[in-house]
Amino acid sequence: LNVDSECILVESSRCVAAIFLSIKENREMAALSGETLSSLMVLANSAILQVAEQATCALANLLLDSEVSEKVIPEEVILAATRVLQEGTVSGKTLAAAAIARLFHSRRTDTALTECVNRAGTFLALVSVLESADAGSAATSEAINALTFLSRSGGSSGPINPAWAVLAEFPNSMTPIV
Image 1 (tube, rainbow, N blue to C red):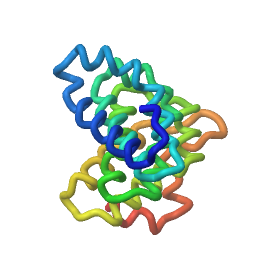
Image 2: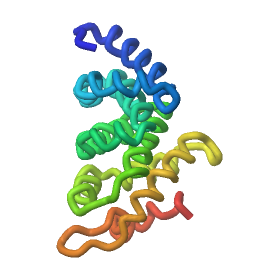
Image 3: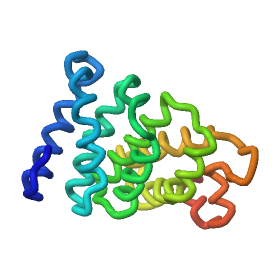
Image 4: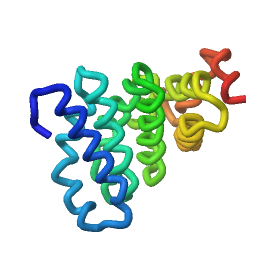
């Protein structure tokens, strides 16, 4: 995955994403995932949006394995996925929402993660996916899953608001959720 050509990076990330779809059934693949995790995180933060989308897709597939999910630095996944949610294609947004949902599926939301989600604008980015996606689509389903996990974070003790509190600041953003 250490290549300079944009096209090669996009396609190699796409291949890795397809390979990691079998991670839950193939323990050998899970063992290899640790070696590619840091490279995928670098690619997920690429300035080239297509590369970032494909790397986020691969990360979403990697996060199907709860052991891998525990190894990632959640803030890095949140920031990379939020960028794709805000700027990406419908397909990229769907997989970015899946990455966030899978990250929080096996992880308790703490103050640091809530602060990262708030700072990145993840909650509103997920709501905007609902706004732009067709009802019943994969994008809608993944965004709802991610919003559900983020909403379970409950209240916060201290100066950090829960992720869903942003809806009070932007009441019009509630429409797609309702």
